[in-house]
Length: 103
Image (cartoon, helix red, strand yellow):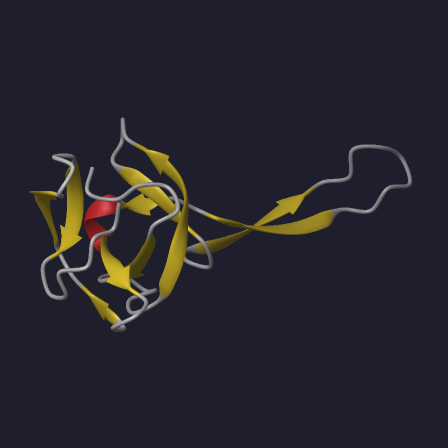
């Protein structure tokens, strides 16, 4: 997958298009990611015990990883990823537009 947990990404399609957030969780088996503040859903929870009141909980639902692009916070631009090798010979991810190393 082109994104990892902790990356800052921008949503490029869907109802939350243009929003920027951090990846909280990655599901590689289904190619989905959970982004902070994106695709927020509400869930009505019934009371569990007698006398307790119900609740309305909000949570971020997963979205497909193809709908997000890595985002450069310095240059304020989203870009695709290219893989390159640094001076140590390690394979690292680099933003194509800015040349910024992510890893």
